Length: 188
Image (cartoon, rainbow, N blue to C red):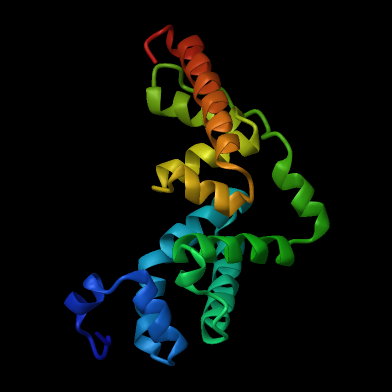
């Protein structure tokens, strides 16, 4: 099936690998569908790293340009066991690293600054603050899971064994639970 014109119903049933093949074949509408499908997820990943709307948008745009070039150059192949979403996130992550000055790369992995006093009666604010207090590696695992990534996809994206993701998630959940219990009086 080829996506032409504005046939949105067709776009919904075309799988990622088929879209990738169509983009590689020069179909611009297929790339538009791919961007529509993943732009918010890629932007979200980048924004969580940068905490800056304009910078995240710039890196996101560059990442999609690299994705487009990679698909045209046949650098993605589902026959290699690759997952398009993970492949695209790896490109976004590499783009982020490539575009950031070295001083900002270090700052990304630094512990977050303590925030202003959290309204302790608001469970959502307590959870958000608890997430901010997690080490970046643990926080990333929880955020990726909230974005719908599987442990296998997270491991592939981060370039670590799946057991490392399981370990990090366990640490993050335990730390977040402890933080919430402390600030919500056991109600978290």
